[in-house]
Image 1 (tube, one colour):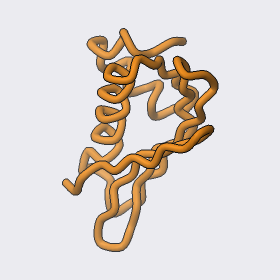
Image 2 (spheres, one colour):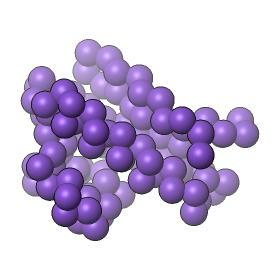
Image 3 (cartoon, helix red, strand yellow):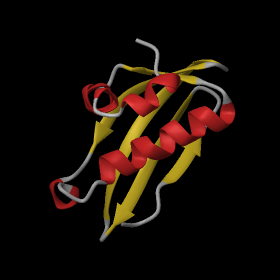
Image 4 (cartoon, one colour):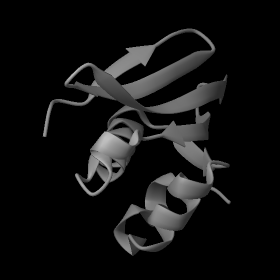
Length: 94
């Protein structure tokens, strides 16, 4: 799997993976310094089954812990995946 890259702005950001000219991404909105909303995940068919979505979310969780913010999982993929990982409960707010 290719590296997960983060673009972080003042109000929005995203995690993405580029591979063979295509891109998977997970976007977020920053509401406060301690609350970030996971908005959307888009994974092209060519990435399906590669773990790209989980890789981006794993990095998102690691960054939340390191930077001290909580994630509100409005994205259906993020919400469903966090339920499969109870060890991530400390970074999610629902």
